[in-house]
Image (cartoon, rainbow, N blue to C red):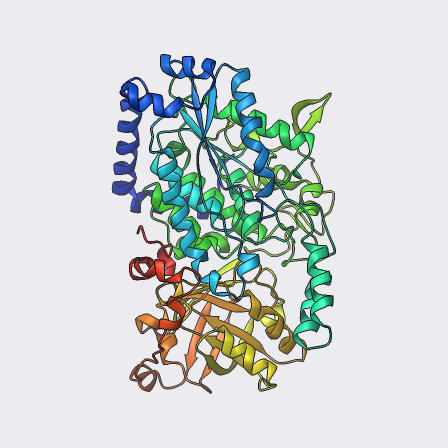
Length: 604
């Protein structure tokens, strides 16, 4: 299977750009492998601490330094529906390890916050930073050097990218990511969206809204729309860090448990003590990153990954840019229509053929690198399968030749559009990204006067006061990573959708985020340079004419550029947003964080 030249070109330039940093990274993890796991070198006191709570047989195995020991890094809590199923995973994993003569220990836990709960709240200002906290917590979990391999239990928005970054800092260890799966389908996502819009207009009350939300988010498992959480699962599979077919099996099912047991055994089989040594640092190369980006574009995935994938790649010594992403988007067809890019949810996507069908289509079309390392021990062609239980045993059958739901998941011969779901916007206002897969053609070019707000609260207040009665590009600034932590502004979707529904030409321009749930209103997000750094967004005034062209990939101030750039940047006292809900503890993060197009990370 030969990859298309446009995709190979991007892969080659990432490799060339990253030659020195990738070499240094590989040298570090290869040295760590040669040093090995230090259980035998630990003092008796050290080792006694390490297995004090183990059973006598486990102590004997660990004392001899011959039995494999698997580290479990978990993001379990029982507040997040997606993470609640992980409560029982450690026992399943330990039992599976014992079956092959190994041991397993919970190495540590990482925080897992829910963007769905914190939308529009002060806690959302911690969301993006939580990714890097999770990476550091992962490193602390593994720092005892007791483990020959590790498994990672995580699903949602910042959790998986944080776990990946942390795992890559221990890149000499094999790593398998174990998902928990999506909740069963509730009310249709478009029905939920309609109730939100009615609430924004004051046509239904809080009771009706809560009833609709509760019918949508109703049980354990990931939310079923295609936001960052489910984009994470797609990425882990297409990048070879999941077992084949594992991403979208519902929690609490026999198949889900069978996949978890097999993932445990697979992780242990990849250790340095065996013949199939495959550490995560070797899996995550430029080809794997490009495969992840192709998957993101082909499915209309989360805009958050225009930052997360850059940060994840950097942790493996790879330098990825928005230009790389943009060029790959131009070369990738859109094959999935999952809400907000359509009316179906991820359960429908899975039933249509899911990841196995998607990967097979992209491989046969020359869009993916087949010759990669994976935790399954094959190239990517090993992932063109469906996981099933046959006579109570885990089996992998070839994925279907045709989609069962062509309106949800289609082939490369009949794509929903010829290019991917994400687009880079550039112009005299800086650089930003936009998710176009959910935006209708007639809304992809907006030329309108600016209406400027210093935060999402101002826009909400203006809408409720009935002040927004015409075409506009809403500029929401001082929401960037350095300013206040770059919160998601998803609560702006209902009022902007209402205005669009009234026939106005509406778009959003912000240095904040809108997440994978961003939908039918065009939104130029992650604007960089951000307002607090004096970027052009800080010079925009009410009434300035702005043109957003998602087809051409441009975002432009229309007018006298000399006068525009001579303006004094706007300023805002952000101190009130730096305290409360723990935000005062993240002053160091706000001072260290990098720009959006370099991953918005405190590490880079």
